[in-house]
Image (cartoon, rainbow, N blue to C red; front, side, top):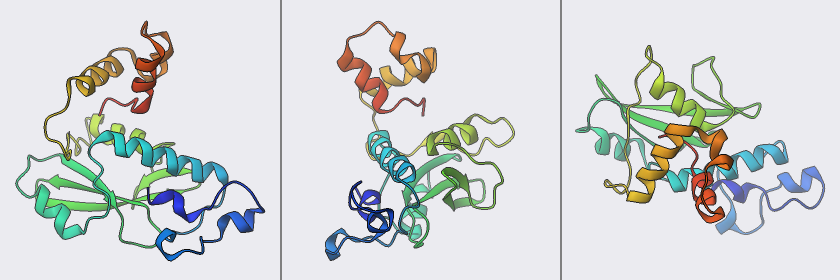
Length: 187
């Protein structure tokens, strides 16, 4: 996981926690974290992105646009940003062709470059732009595996039906609740 390597661990002074790790293979181009809560937000986001199937990791803009070129309008993916101070980029198929927009993470909130709207999580941002009637630009996640498993489809349907907040009330065993919590979004 790339994002967490900019912070060594939770021990030491804040300055020591922000210092890059000494080993070149552990260093990233990402800026250091301002707080432990920002670090945790990015680590949690990375974990859920890995689970989502539409996170592609390191990928150039040309590669992303090539993948999306022949996909339906509204198809999107998340990839690592190539810019030093940005973690992620959203690439999607617009009516005019593929487009990429940086995803800012400032003041513990996610926003699209140039937008005044910000969200507590990257997935709230994606849900907003995929459910907004006015801004319906994100429709179909472009997943690495084109066919989703029955488990993923069931999880998506449960989350759509009862919402992420109601996972604790779903009458299933703890292992299944953990599975529901691992990606509690209807994307």
